[in-house]
Image (cartoon, rainbow, N blue to C red; front, side, top):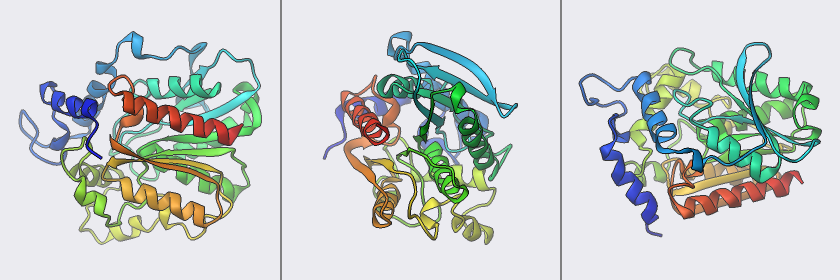
Length: 325
């Protein structure tokens, strides 16, 4: 299917932003030097916070700031529906390097509204200042803390969800695996275009390597910031086999929480996301899986730019609501 025309127009508009373009990762950035974490964070904020006005933010009942486990910054979104309602622990995307509570504010608001759920958005530690496994540790700490205090959030322990998009979806998949190992029951996991096999080789990494918002060059740069080694380093093979980095490499996926897995046709991560959905299904896990043709990585936050992205987001949230009841 051709690239969605609204997404194509958005990609053309990126050239007008006063920040490094999305193809600058790991390359010479405008103004000299290499693109670093600060510039990557500025780019993501420009593409999210800088592109949205108040009218693009879905209405929810309340939004409050808090700290989980005493130190993890978080933002709690509450629906107009009275408790008990589901609770979603949301772990923002951004390649484990960028992203924060503001860049993914619309994502959390949309989930809160569409699911009638309390959404707890977590601001975990980022690389390269805090490399793997810092983000994994923070994510799981947040999930288990919310589970122990669910009465203060959605109030229904039987409807606890972990989920996100991109790197946050990877963290969510890892948390779902660890939760099962620890006996913590989750109602569902939400995995929107996750990275599931960092060291793998997939056709989509080549087919969609350039020109579709997220590039393969960017992927490698993010991976290196996160794990602290390059692709040619001997240590990278060990990291690539670690299921906390590559959840597809886990030995056993049976009895994990039901999953919504969404991928995009023009995404370098498409094939490994599809492979994870198939592996979950093959292990007997209930999975709602769909590849969205014509869309790119990042579409989950692009509903204000593209009706097709908005329709995909609505399908994802409806599927998740169906899983959790």
